[in-house]
Image (tube, rainbow, N blue to C red; front, side, top):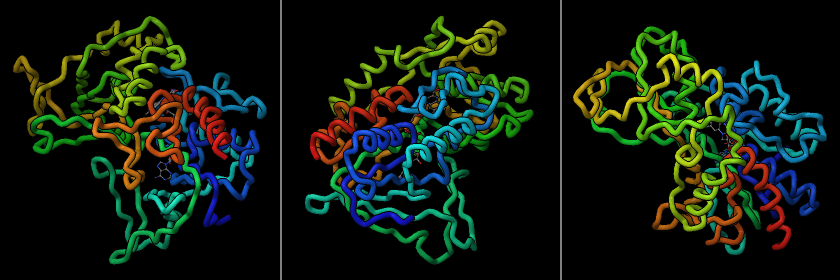
Length: 388
Ligand code: FAD
């Protein structure tokens, strides 16, 4: 099935947010099938979850909410097998969901650029299906992941064009890892990795590892590496705000959601979600605190070739530094639309970009959780219905 040349609504991204919007566009019978398209650059279903490390399980910290209508298939993440990697369960459920609701996702199709073309939006995209490969170039945040397939001396992949009246951008954050700058970063002779580069604890066997970050990913890495690394040091830029709850239902984290919403509505850069929610303590985490593993040191102040230096002058040896320091919304391809404000963010209210009535941002700011992303679908589809 090829991507049409013109549609009324183009959804970019088939994670929780994009699928939810697609579900309601179909449920409300807003647009005929041929007037609606979903593009996703990943090779298979699962949104960002398909890229997460194998040891990550459902319910290790947060609740994963169901997609709208998922009950019709007799599926729920609440009753899913928690002994399997989350990425397998979620890819499987999303795949079945897409089939059941006939959400024909075009993949792997990467959107490179969205720009104005009169009243329309012009979407330039590339087909990322593996081409005959002479050379596989590997690049990533720290030069390790994300493969592009290209032939030397020739453009990586030709781009094609699609025109749409509305664009729903649901591209999440996974492709836009954030690492803060610290003096000495480039002099470090060990390995820098971001959460998005992490694959397996065994990669750190017998090494001195520093884990940076105050959220559930950092805690997960500490627990996984405990009996593998030679020495583990956990540092956080702010004290950990432990909650007495075992699992965080992001719906309940209303203060954090309100903070995100306020920033989005005023066009400011989005604050860290963890800074507003606190960190839940399940039994495994509580035991880790008890035995002294999960005790974060205040952030180091600089990095040297093989160690980090703390403000009090003490040091910790380091073969690898894992930056579990979060993500930013992935919006680079929307740059030609000039949605970004001087204050650093995009002004977004109820999923709508206030600077351009043809553009919606699903899964952005207060919608950046599985519950928010699911809710975004109805909210955005309703607004599109009103405009159509
Ligand atoms: P994604 O799942 O990231 O989907 C975005 C999709 O867009 C991807 O499929 C990607 O391929 C596609 N895409 C991106 N750019 C392009 C492009 N240019 N062209 C085409 N396609 C593109 N939330 C919870 O509620 N509970 C949890 O337990 C939980 N755990 C988390 C654990 C980790 C480690 C992280 C990082 C986040 C976690 N979250 C959790 C947050 C949660 O993942 C998200 O809020 C939600 O799943 C994101 O859905 P999404 O659809 O917005 O984005």
